[in-house]
Length: 242
Image 1 (spheres, rainbow, N blue to C red):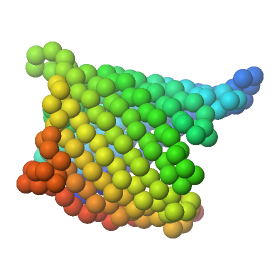
Image 2 (image 1 turned 90 degrees about the vertical axis):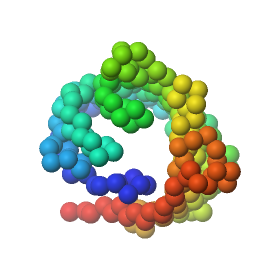
Image 3 (image 1 turned 120 degrees about the vertical axis):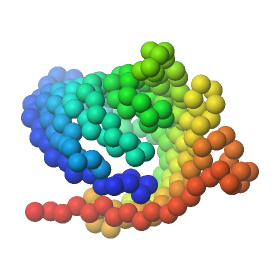
Image 4 (image 1 turned 90 degrees about the horizontal axis):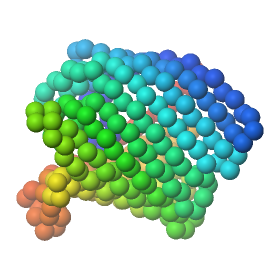
């Protein structure tokens, strides 16, 4: 459900994979997967794909996955039906480093939420996480995306920036402030501000308290409050063992 009041999702799937640990590779994975899901539509979406992942002895790593499928998706009271194609690559350094760097890139034929249209997209997403103090983590990243207008076959660019400053009171309790902004053809079209209180009350089970501010223009909420929406969300994610 995330941090906005959307409908939930019904899903299921399966995966087959092989694992090796050899030479410079701490882990080496190959696999295939398939699944179905339904989110606010009467029809089920279906997909199949492959993936490859490895982690070196120094904890640097690489991941690749690709999939195709039939998609039914409801967005802004409209239902979209299309055949999706997607490939995603990512690289990262040692997760335990004080400064962690991750770079991902990919392409897809999918729904563009900023334009409410289906078309081809490509992206590059660099991300840096810096542990300033043992209890304080700064995580920031860019998303540089180009998308095709299906009516004109022309391509447009948009840039998204996100920042997350998180204070850990304990291993199970944290408070984060998340800010993101999106620019389309050089104009700011979306800003989100989300304070998030997270509490892990049981292994892999979380309780969230979220306050969300959303603006569709360039002005910040204290300068132009009439063009901002706000709401609060309580969310519980619970893992059941059986």
